[in-house]
Image (cartoon, rainbow, N blue to C red; front, top):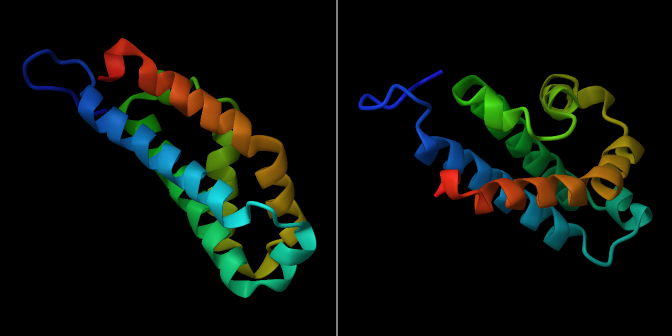
Length: 126
């Protein structure tokens, strides 16, 4: 874990930036899929690529935040699963099930977005 030279505590500016990256990826996922059905998603190569890329960013950002400031990263529900999902997208790309990706999008994105926003309004993150 990297720390601030002056205080020895985790540098909140970096943690905040990871949270902002997660927030932006959540926003993009919502925008990319607004009004779309699973069939729309499944039949659109560009949309699938864009959605998978944002999930990769979320997982990698969370993984980096975990190394940098595990206390904050640990406040994200299912952080281990999110990082594992990112790893699966990156390393197991040939076996990605579109229904699983869509399910994660529909069932978990809103909770993640709310948790990230909650962490960002914490006075310690400013």
